[in-house]
Structure formats: C-alpha cells, structure tokens
Image (cartoon, rainbow, N blue to C red; front, side, top):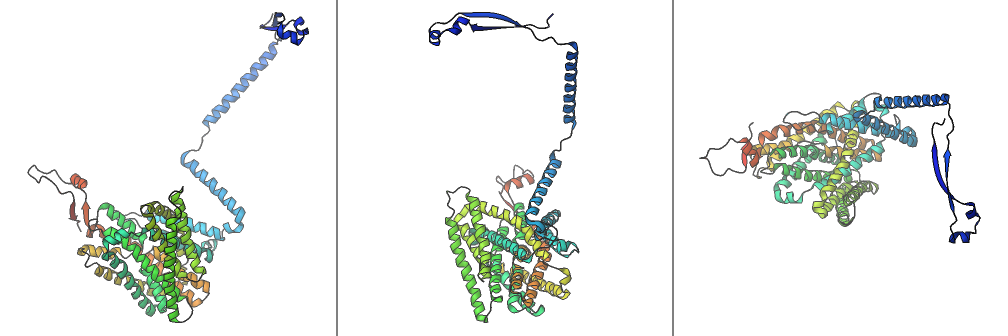
Length: 547
C-alpha cells in the first residue's frame, strides 16, 4: 500500500501540433491533450524514519540548550561596559602611538611624561575642587594642579620616569599664555568701563603699579636682583588672578551680595585691566632685560615692542572682523580657530624676531578688537576658547610646579621671597582701600574690595616662567638664576595667596556686603501683613547681613 499519493495535471500540445510549421502554428492552434499522472513517492523503511526522527530530536535539543545558555550568559552593561570600552580604546590609542613614536611614549620618554603630568594635574584639580566647606566657595582647582606637578618633580624614582623636555615645556606654556591673553581680551567689557569709569581705572592701575614698584625695590635689596629684574618680578606678582576672583564674584552675585552697587561687576571688569597692565609692564621690562647695548637703547627697544605689539594687534583685529564673513557655515568654529591661531602665532613669532614682549600685547589687542567687531556674537567664541583653556590649564600649572626642585631651593631665597610677597600684599591692601575712598562705598565694602584684590594665580603661572625660558635660550647662568628666583616667588605667591584669597572672599562677602533681595524672595520670607498695613510693599529689600 502507498503512504501518500500526489496527482499532477499538466497540458502539452499534441504530436501533430509539434510537427506543424511555426507559421501555420501561429494561425491554427493544434489540439491539446489533458493527461492525469499519478506520482508515487518512494517507499521508506521504518528504520530510516526512526533515524530521521532521532536526528530531529537531537538537533532540537541542541538548539534549545544553546538558546538557554545564551539567555543565561551575563552581558556587561552600564558602568562596567563603559569602563571596559574606554580601557580598550585607551589600549588601542597607546598601541598606535607606541608603534609610531617608539620609546617616547614609554617611561622616561617625553610624550609619556606629558601625558602622566596632564592626568595627575587633572586628578589633583578634581580632588582639591571637591573640598567644600559650608558657606564658602570651593578651593581653586589650580592648587591641586600645581601641587601635582610639584610632587611629580620631587618624588624619587618618579621624577626619573616622568621626564619632560624643556623645549616642549616652554612651548606648551607659551600656548597656554596665548589662550589666557585671548580670554582676557575677549573678557574686556567696554560698557562696564564706561559705567564704572574712574573707580574701575583706579582699582586696576593704582594697586598694580604701586605693588610692582614696592616689590622691585624690596627684591633689589633683599634678593640682590638687578633693577630691571626687580621690576620683572614686581609685575609678575602684581597681577590679580581671574581664576580665583571671577568664580567667587559670580557666587556672591548669585546670592545678591553687593549687587546694588555693582561690586562684583566692578571687580571682574577691573581684574581684566589689572592683568593687561601687569602683562604690559612685564613685557616691556623683559625686552629691556634681554637687550644688549646702552640703557637708553634698551628702554627705546622696550617702547618699540609695546608700540609694535599694539599696532600689529590692531591690524590683526581688524582682519578678524572681516574674515570669516557672517554668511559662512560653522562661523563660530572658524572664528575661534582663526583667533587662537593668530594669537599663538603672534606669541611664537615675537620670540623668533627678537621682540618677545610684543607677542603678548598683540594677542591682547587683536582679541579685544575682534570682540568689538563681533559685538554680541563674541559669546560663543569666548565659550569655545574657554574649552581650550580647560585642556591647557592642567598642563600650565602642572608644568609650573614641575619646574621647582625643592632640594635646589635656598632657604634664604624662600624666606626673603615670602617677605617680599607679604610686604607687597600689605601695600596692595592699603592702596586698594585708599583708591576706593571716593567711590561711594561704605567702610565694610571698602574692606571687602581690598581683601578681594589679593589672590594671585593665573597670570603668575603664565608669565612666571617666561623669563627663565629666555634665560635658558641665552645660556647665561646668572640670568638663569634670576629667572629661577622669579619663578620660585611666583609659585610661592600662588600657594599662599590663592587659598587665602578664596577663603577671604567667601568669609568676608556675606559679612561685609549688603544683600539685594528680589521681590518674590522677600514675599516668601516675610510674614503676611495685616489689613491696616501699607497698600504696596517695596519691590526690593536692602539689608545688612549679620556679622
């Protein structure tokens, strides 16, 4: 008997139709026959059917086991997956760089030292930034970056593995200097200068110039520095730090302290002018110190550097106002690249042509002119320049800390240097208190402005090592010693004044400044008034905070 039957019908032309002429076939359709054929499948034995059934059962069991194992196998997700992915990317990057550079990316190599310094500086800044005391602003992260470089330089065995060539170190610091000066030029606010007028100029010029002169005189007699090197040190130490002042002022401004009289705005605007004045004086004295010839010729060369830097900055700033034009795509990115490129090129070119002081002034002026031309559209460019500063800030402070070798420091130099710094700070406090006498401030506000004008960090790190780099290029041991003294005092000033200034601003602000409270906040805090009270409440409440 058959297990299955299949019937298939098909139609084919008759034999006569196949033998007809094709021409006749197109006209006459031949007869067709319809046939029915029964197709019988091959007979299968019971043994073959059992074997097929067993194979099917085994395959189904194997697939089920694989699916079950796949479902039960854990798949890394979330943080573990992210860490593993980043580790793989880091390993691939290291392998690629090692294949290209060879020994440079291994311990003792230059590239290895730069990467390790950058990572340690970032971690040090994060750790110090996590130190948060109640009602106080956070500690500036730059302290952790500076200490990280200092430790890497002075811990045995580690200092041999973390090696950075002096030429690379100087180049990276010059790039960071160009970025700082670009940010300072973009941060200048002409409207704030017009609004605050004489008070802003007095705060920016008076304390800076007097402190620079006092430190020059004191360092000449205590540290035996030549007069021109004394003024170099004076202008290095006379600049206030925007990295400490600006975040603290923004915190007080958000809480409403000193807002009515514009004290936070005044200090942030005057800080930029203070830095520009200090950098201008430093550049002029630096050009005089490394010039050969008579004293009057050196002074003339310094003035020529100032004039040349300003003129070049004006020309390049006007160029940036025109190029790129407003109709181009990715305008912010192109403006940022053009601005940073011209700034860095100006700083390096000034060294090549022998006018080292002109590069910084050119960068300041060209960024300020570009900001005037861009007007309100400068904000996204300034934000992108700030992102580049986030990359070079750890490198700058880490490299500055790595320049200091504790064992080579003279105790007398450290002690006398701290004395110079303290004398300069006392004079700066007094002068700042005096220049704001006619500004319409109360006694408490004058004291706060004087305290807020103390911290030093950013400019000292940017220009503190510049004289040492130029002395190393000359190869004069005496000049190298003077440059090391200037750098040592710059680092000491950062370590002492940055945390003290941040704490002083955080403690003195709520106690010495009047708080400006908005109407909605006063309504939430004030108790409900009686029906017999005044019909309208004041929209703003001004009160002195408790000491």
